[in-house]
Length: 307
Ligand code: NCD
Image: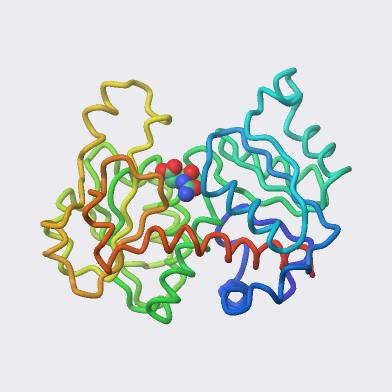
């Protein structure tokens, strides 16, 4: 695997083989985390978060600390020179003077790419607006792979806000590369996947998909159900959000329609879309998924730093 010095801006930046070797490395970390506790000694990760985050930022920071490295950064852009009007290009060039690798989350689509073009330091996209979230996808895929062995021939239901949900766009893109994968895209009319995902990703790759508003109807055929939050911060008005926010609520009763071995995934945070009673069901993988996120990011940091 030679990912040293590269950036991760969108899910197809790494080949299937490169992605597989990252999963293998993450698996080695999970099996023996102590073997890796010094490998990034003397290295510095910068986290530039222009939008709220819990899991993504903490899991990156925990990942670097568990590798023996250190972390600098901000989660309140108002506390940095961003507040004075500094461009993302100038900010990243400055950060590159101090750090070895940077993670950026930004409300503007493409901002991490602009940053990556302004430096030789590896840059990781931790979510850019309603566009992409490739490290969440690596985490999602690792979770599926650990439970099911691979991705071929999976029927994947993606439910909720498919329009603004960046995790959804990245997941569809990544899974479209595998043999026999098919999608049930479950969303209200107004929150269907964007045209570019339908045309440039699904149709172009020849991936079969069906669009429906009916979760119950899709449920029995699914191997994986990927639930998502309605992305309030991307709506133009609050009334639309309020009308659509509870379009789907997965509860124990609905889960009765699912296969005994279906996996329920969710990138989190959840709002209302999965009832708390589902957490105890063996099919609920979302907290395991959050934990896998740290191991996945440990593997990613090591690979991009070439340690
Ligand atoms: C997601 C995100 O930020 O896009 N969260 C995450 O990184 N796990 C999903 C969301 O906010 O709904």
